[in-house]
Image 1 (cartoon, rainbow, N blue to C red):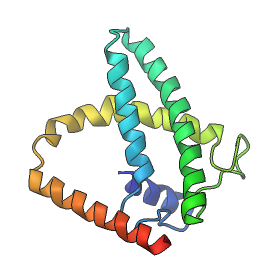
Image 2 (image 1 turned 90 degrees about the horizontal axis):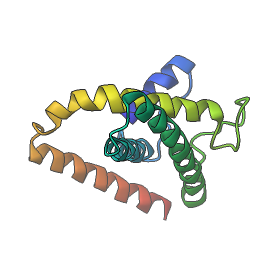
Image 3 (image 1 turned 90 degrees about the vertical axis):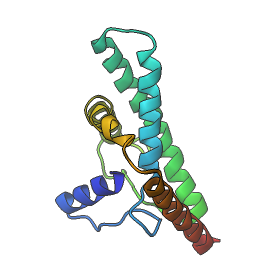
Image 4 (image 1 turned 180 degrees about the vertical axis):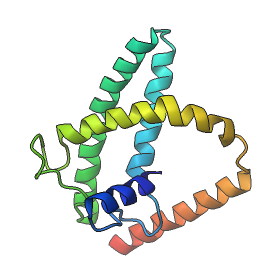
Amino acid sequence: MGHLFEVIVDLILNIKPGSGILYGPWTPIYGFGVLIMLGIKNILEKFNLKKGIQIILYFISVVIILTILEQIGGMLLDKCFHKTLWNYSNLPLHITKYIAVETSLGWGGGAIIIGYVIQPFLQKYIAKIPFLLTALVFCAFMIDVILTICRYI
């Protein structure tokens, strides 16, 4: 879904598509981000808070944590692979080249859509995905990761 999001944004903003470092349609930072989002949501649900308070805390937590993830991810890609895949220096509220208030707020809004709309809808179907398909996709992803690492070593 992260790769699809990138392609759509690139088409709308007329940016060169393909901002990832892997060969296939994978954008791992989005995967880690979604796992973090859902983890935060699960933790907050254990507190039995009113839904409005839960959503506000979720938004704030996701904005802070995903902003940190984006900064670390950008620095690691630059350091390990000598690539800058995103640069927010041209945005008015950028903090570093890897993070900006505008994008951080976007992650918070996206988290609400993913956590409270998309994930509950998809949850019904996830258990129906055949294990073999999951294993094949995972193997394809791992091969891609290995090939990418070998390319930069």
